[in-house]
Length: 228
Length: 228
DNA sequence: ACGTTTGCGTTCATACTGTTCACGCCGTGC
DNA sequence: GCACGGCGTGAACAGTATGAACGCAAACGT
Image (tube, rainbow over all chains, first blue to last red):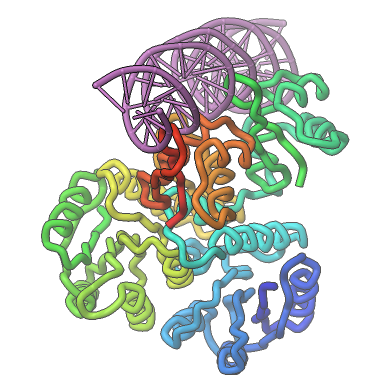
């Protein structure tokens, strides 16, 4: 279970964020703070109690200072909590400062519930890929863990993709019981293997499908796509 | 031009890193530091001179303290420099702490020159995508910028190996209590002995597994693989 | 020392992947 | 009305991850 603290001065937004966190499997909202000072007190108390907070949903505009200043104070105090910035700050300078301050995700307000949910799921996967302890890791594993923190925008489709085709590909995947190869999806959706693959890869990127190899008798293994 | 400071106690490695940085277009190595204290002094001096360092290549094992401690002190002092960790620390706990401390890349030593180069290029792209003065920025642009920092290097795995298969082979080895023969690993992972051996050998090469012969019966000894 | 036994390591055919490029289509400007 | 540029699609092709076959290496038994 990943313990989350919501830091947000607007009570309505704070409640909404807390609700979204509770709804995400594996996450638990252990409290909300209205200000930087309150957040620091909360984190300190949890740490002395031996149950440190793992993740912060942090609004950057707080009544008693900037959210990034809270980040810095937090790091200086030795808190290891990860931070997802949830803010309406739309300027690039703030984004850059957030990155250097160690913010793992940056979500612009207003956002859809699914958008936050996607980020929380990604974060959970990142945690899972780093949860094994006491073992030597390779560069590939480190890269994979970092890649989990990367999120694609789900609201706008990338160039070369259309809603209609995406819908039919997603529908095929939804109907299928097990995993389906790109070629099979293509046939079922009435498009070529290449096009089907394009959309399936997009679904994987946005976390709505997974890809796993199916080893045959001989030859390169077939990639099977399955909805999550 | 992106100003880089190399923080590394080994003079040979420091020179090599500085050389690699100079060779990357758009980057300039403005100095090297042998210790955390020296690095802090250097950053402070550059900042007062009005030419703050933009990026650190940071070794985590320093003579006067851990590199991540330097990160925290740096943030507390308000330095906004980004950090690429270049280290031989192969444990997941350190990786996690590095992420929460605001490390943008994590490169394991020893590394190929091309590997560092790839990361520098990606960092340059990240900078470029955030350098526009245009104020209003959308979620998609933020995501793209983050993605530049977190895209896994495709060249980390040798030709002929896939992350999915590597993961399942590594998982089998992790679950096993004692040593396992290539054939046994293959059966458990759902691949052939040949494929299992390929990945096991890779794990041995990268120091994540060891290989030891099992004597006792008639015939050629069986090679048992075990995680480290 | 030599045969026997057992599994290793290499080669190569194979099947699927992933990329590149040309085509057709829709919308826009002149 | 016609040229044009951008965009979504698929055919062709090179690339690549896999396993079967097979020769060989390394141990034990006599």
